[in-house]
Length: 248
Image 1 (cartoon, rainbow, N blue to C red):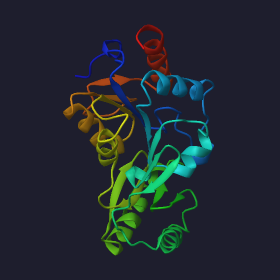
Image 2 (cartoon, rainbow, N blue to C red):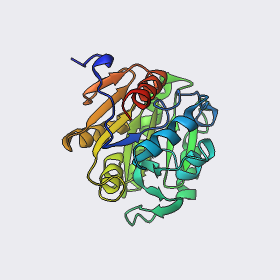
Image 3 (cartoon, rainbow, N blue to C red):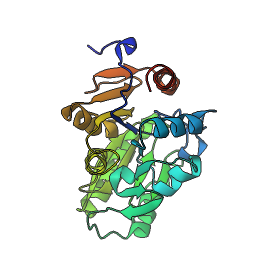
Image 4 (cartoon, helix red, strand yellow):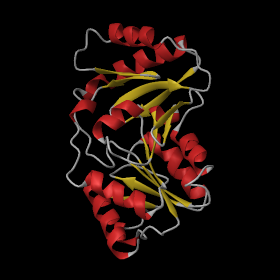
């Protein structure tokens, strides 16, 4: 049984905080380009970054440029495209593990495959592609079949199920790997990892944080490996603000 939200301990000064973006810091939107950044979020992240000595990172399936467009002043590290991209001190480091991909061709193939289903959203990513069926959940099977066909044609890529979507991303990448890479370098090294996320893509990272003696925090409903759960991004914001006020 999941512990109650009020049992979630506050962050310690020795924590390393890892935060997903969609469904964690911002509410899920019908389209990736329709999210709304809550008032106060940039300031909250800046305060956390200062109080934790810089040990705050965003870890997302979005690419770095997309994340920057929503939080342009975020001072911390960013892991984008499920860890295929890493940004440190404003520098973008590619970490695609040697996958040789004609991404434009992949995008075209995905768009052609779902051209007869306009409710399916094709999200073009620098290191892969995602198909969203949130507008019509009955199209889940169509999306899964199309993505399996694309995966068969690209053996260096792997399927990543998500909320109302399926993504094709480079093999060898993942949010757990992003956490590991960041935990090996300052200012994260030697700290206790705390990872908050809402999606299937976050589960391995939460498990990794807990294996390192830290915590996972599931945002929203659904089965999870996380030790703790909060109901929604607003609840996470309240917990972070309480932590800033009482402990950090």
